[in-house]
Length: 107
Image (tube, rainbow, N blue to C red; front, side, top):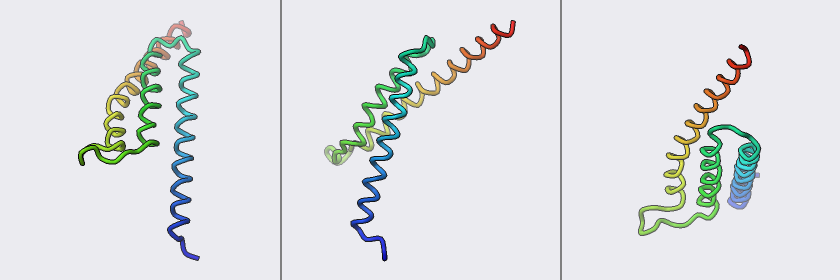
């Protein structure tokens, strides 16, 4: 019983579905948290969540290379650069925010 081509495509399709479901769930959870929190950097989080959701569409609705140069997957990778910077900027701000809150609480 070898792994036939049909079985491989079924597995690959399942992998994509699971990855999309997990990504959408993560975006939803962060969006809900950003909606209810009063965190000073929540706007950065909103940009990453909305932009990440839109970028996920590039992965889902793949298109061939435009004029042989840029395809959806390449554009998706390009979007990860500013989103990664914003995400880590949010993480840094969150660390400062939470540390200052703990220091105030300890006083």
